[in-house]
Image (cartoon, rainbow, N blue to C red; front, top):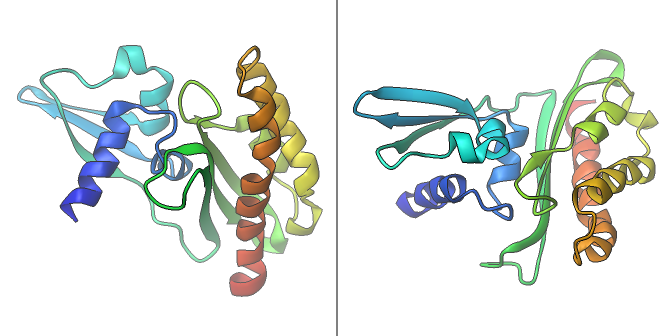
Length: 189
């Protein structure tokens, strides 16, 4: 238990773009608390990474909490990574999706976070906008991955890893989105 807590906290504080625990925590809208003798400050985890040079932990601070709302009956969180080995491997890329279903099988909320597809773990807002409001049976996974690839091309332009990641992201993305959609077919509907 101590090792797991230390690993998650270390992943956050080190701000690695490839940390496995970060995309699911971002997809859950996690809030972290950084504390010192004078008080504490709360930050959305997404903002901690986005504004890392300004918001990073100070020498006199400790990460004292990570808070998020647990998915409920009409919500699901999925995660998939691509690494060189199944265990103890740094992710080449990772994707996590939080999906919430409203009445009439309409997606009322979706949060997609990726790791190692940019300078830091990031929410894939263009893909979210493409999917939100659609009914489950209207979501075309193949079309939504094109939106993700387009965003990646903007972010990773000029990097030697772009051709590989652009192709490699398809498998994990298809799986994580399909797992989220299948959850509702099997459990909720």
